[in-house]
Image (cartoon, rainbow, N blue to C red; front, side, top):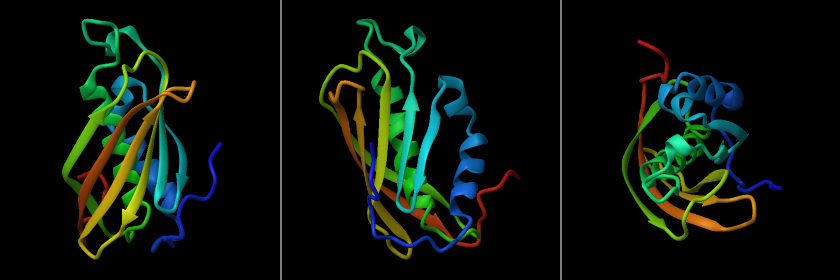
Length: 151
């Protein structure tokens, strides 16, 4: 279950369709089978089903995969608040892995503070049983006048 997570207002009334269209173009998310399941102003969720080919040597979902889904969840949370004429890039993030990822996952990205150029987000990854797998803090930079469309 999720509730309205933020009080933020998107600058683009068609933000959800724009976010979903951008996510659909992400070949990396397609490669690992990630699905964008929730899009709200300043908040998104990405689901990832457990697959053996996404694991490290002990059978846990690889930390790089955790970073991928948290980075995208946070990035799309930020992108949902940006003008349609912009795009963004991740400037930096830090992730703490708190428990082994041994099953299906949900990455939740939420805007902490949107800025004119830099936006700070928080990402959390959970398993269906409520196990908190990882936490991320991220900074993204808006690229004004650079739409997030294919070249």
